Every structure is written in structure tokens, then in C-alpha cells.
Image (cartoon, rainbow, N blue to C red; front, side, top):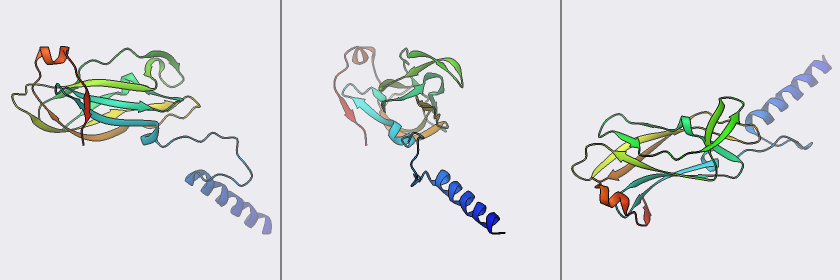
Length: 165
């Protein structure tokens, strides 16, 4: 009976340590991982010419999947990624041969059919992993930005960026 109680206490303690990410007082060789919002810091910026940019700061040792980048919205003018840059090719244990991004990613966003400045709510979906073996579930980040009609000349002459709040 005493053995069963001891085993139950050890099992409960181990489960709590695992569930809450508490480090063991006996030391641990398992790596610690950043929370997803620190591993992949997403922001929306707007250049002085009006171009809206999605920007990720990707922590060292982490990467984003190109094929998991998505834009979702319920209404309003359609938002899309203007040009996704080429990523690095990686043989991934989960998806096979894929393109991924390291360190930093900036992607212009387009809003279709605007005739005036328009505030648009949308969500950006993404997924990434740590090189040390942890893949995060897909994330969806709610965003909002003011989009303005852009002409070809303003897109060819980009200027500095200002962060949207």
C-alpha cells in the first residue's frame, strides 16, 4: 500500500512538472523552448509610401514554414501577400522538403480594389519550429491596418517604415 502511494505521488509530481514546464530540482537535459510569440514576433508596419508590410523577427534556432503563411478575414477588401520571398530549402521531419525562413521575414500585403484609405481587420496564420525538435501548432494572429490605394510608382520607390499601432 505504501509503495502504491509513493508511486502515485511520484507520478503526480512528474505530470505537474511536465504540464507546467517546471524544471526538475534534479536537473534536466531537455532543452527549453521560447513561447511562440517570442520565437516568432509578428508586427505590421507601413512604409511612408503607404505599403503595408507583415514583419516577423524569428529567434535564433527557429524557423517559419513558407507553406503555412496565410491571411484570413471575414469581410472587407481582400488582403493577400504581395510577394513571398524565396526561403531556404529544408528537409523537414514533418513535411518533407519545404521552404523555410530564418531570422527575419518581411512580406508586403495587398488590399484589392481600394479607392480610399480603409481600415481592415484580418488575421495572419503561420507555423514554425525550433531546430531542436519542437514544432508549434499553427498560430492565427488578429491584425488591423489602414490600407491605402497604391500606384505602381509608389511601390517602385519605397521609403522608410513606420510601425502601426
